Image 1 (cartoon, helix red, strand yellow):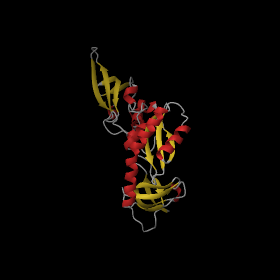
Image 2 (cartoon, one colour):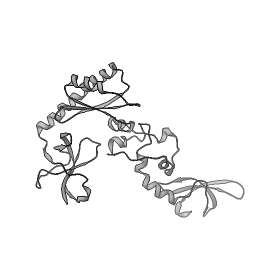
Image 3 (cartoon, helix red, strand yellow):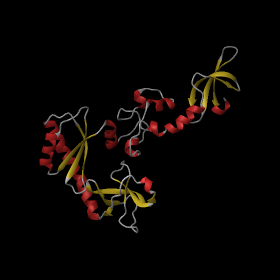
Image 4 (cartoon, rainbow, N blue to C red):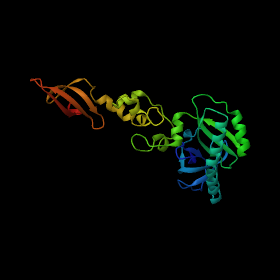
Length: 268
């Protein structure tokens, strides 16, 4: 068993495990900590309080928590965030001057303020070597340019999904999962791209989130168009409500009239 705390570096990032300063150290969820990473010291937020986990759940050697963030550290983080808008403005201006086909999405400073990472999207590969030099000279910092996809762009920028809630990628999911058209079929959704696509233009992440339930439900409900027996006679299934587990059946009477009636799946 190993003692760990879980740390996030932004609201929607995955949780990383770090070793506590000592066995007696305590950390409150939501509090700031300074940790050692492959990129140097970084500021993160405690997502999981101190706990023990089995060794097989640890993929890499644990790096340590250096300290609980001090008021001075918190001030530095706010100062770094305050510099982001001007850095983005400067970078956007240079991108336009150099006529590079790339969309600047965001930027973030390292904890020590000596490095700036710019995120951008583009349909094609971009040669940004000269841009890096210009940005480094103008901003007096090490520069990293990171190209991201359209799903990552939506995750970073956020937005309101068709359901009226914050996009799953920006508010719930730490990592993207594979989403397929079969998941939409399982849920009985109309395969209209405008209905099953998120703000990014790709299939909505929530299709995967609910898929386990619908996969099981699909095996229990009759297929659309299937002839079934009901207490009112034989009929044809025209729709299924897989949340209520109810099927709508069209029953043709001896006189030729048609009746539409809902039946519990258990009654069919």
